[in-house]
Image 1 (cartoon, one colour):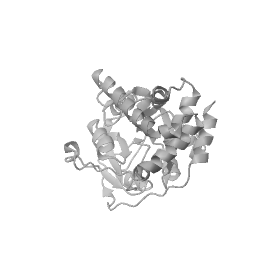
Image 2 (cartoon, helix red, strand yellow; image 1 turned 90 degrees about the horizontal axis):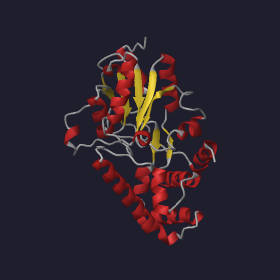
Image 3 (cartoon, one colour; image 1 turned 60 degrees about the vertical axis):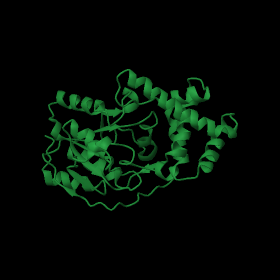
Image 4 (cartoon, rainbow, N blue to C red; image 1 turned 45 degrees about the horizontal axis):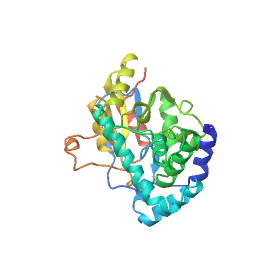
Length: 291
């Protein structure tokens, strides 16, 4: 079973999600001209409906999971125990990785499901993981996604991704934009997904790797801009590696201000935007010059 089948599942199971406006205002100033732009994926480039699902009654969530389990020959009444084992196994892997020195571990989600459901290491576990994800974290392209990617590509800016992700995350671009990531303008060397490295944001690991790659190409850290919706995972973490930062505050579902976290109290994004297309305006004002 190839990626095309998984992409078709994404298309079939997805429907329009509109962002919910926030009360923040756009503003700020970039400190230096920008030559590279990095993005978070969920809640930034794609509307993430996980917040909507979380407010559903547990009985409704269990009913949805039960229907999915039935497809795989598992009794639907096992939904509660399956969900508990799922989160327990994730916690166990996190603890194992922390003992090995990983500050913020990432799991490989299909392996989690193989452990929980006794599935063989095959496409079956990948399809189940994808179907579960689409049930409990539905996504849809953020308004302005194609416009901003085309605008940045036209400017000659290098683009990358630094995101908490799983194997199905790269497929979103092909599913919704009908193009691979390099075709929409991303440099594959700078596409850094957590599941490939075992480190999740807000660990500095992925950002430091991005910084190291940029350094080999003669880029200073402040010439890179990072765009994300989470003050801890995105703004704080990227700023620690010397990147300029944009807080994307275009969807109340996914905006995470993290006001209770002491690490975020003294951190401010260089720029706040409510629409992805606004990024172009701030780049224009900063006099970005990729050459």
